[in-house]
Image (cartoon, rainbow, N blue to C red; front, side):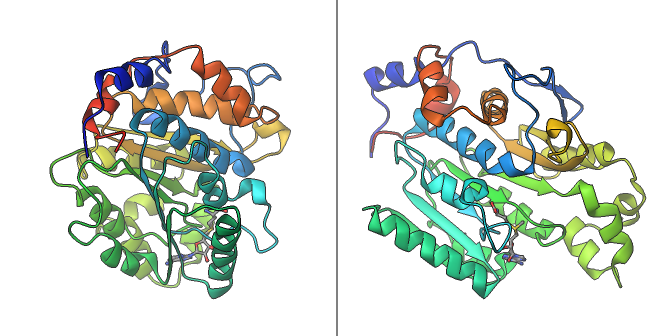
Length: 319
Ligand SMILES: C[S@@+](CC[C@H](N)C(=O)[O-])C[C@H]1O[C@@H](n2cnc3c(N)ncnc32)[C@H](O)[C@@H]1O
């Protein structure tokens, strides 16, 4: 395992430049572009997998390796649409530099979809490490994050695409605390604000809410009626309680009205890398250009380049 050579570093860093920082107002991203065919539209639910795919791809163009964890990995709906399934899209990222995938789902039928996905990858000659875990991710995480399972210098991403309350805060905390000496595992935490108020009101007791929120002051999420305020609370918690250098809530819209409708989710992106919010900004814009194939986005990228020294230096790449 060696460090990135100077030549390789120069090549990697030359991939990107002039990346714009997102406009983040106290933990919540404010979109600065207008909806148009040329600029794209805000990301809507069906495109959230594309956002994750774009971001992870941009990131591994620098690190040249990575491990991907998806705690709630089954497809969104039973009659799934391949294009909107994050696990499938991430497995398809080219170049295939992600080398390990940890996919979990609790529902046996969803696990069948995951098994089929792996069989399809194997049929295509994909020999990478793809682990399927069946069970409650809040428990499975204990087996995944055993000491030494993921190297300190392994670029690691974790998608937590829960429907509403399935991901306990304790799980989020364990993921943040796993690495002891290097940058923390990056998290993409989905906060389903579109129906959260109704779901909280429908709960029969406080247990679920307490485990999801992870603190005793559950009156706070219960009484926070503005979704943007709730998103802000989560961004603050990722930074203040878990110690992430940056956490930003990215809005994901309902599709109606070209994606300018209601915010359905906030995707809280928690990272220790200075450049990562800029990469996410680029990924968000790229993901909104629905008709644009990945190759085209990459061709635009390749000519540009930006300073990703911060990311590349922290990882041993080119192993
Ligand atoms: C919102 S869907 C995930 C969508 C998926 N990420 C996609 O890209 O289409 C949530 C998934 O989590 C699973 N699930 C629910 N509770 C779970 C738990 N405690 N542990 C693991 N999986 C769970 C459900 O079976 C469902 O497949």
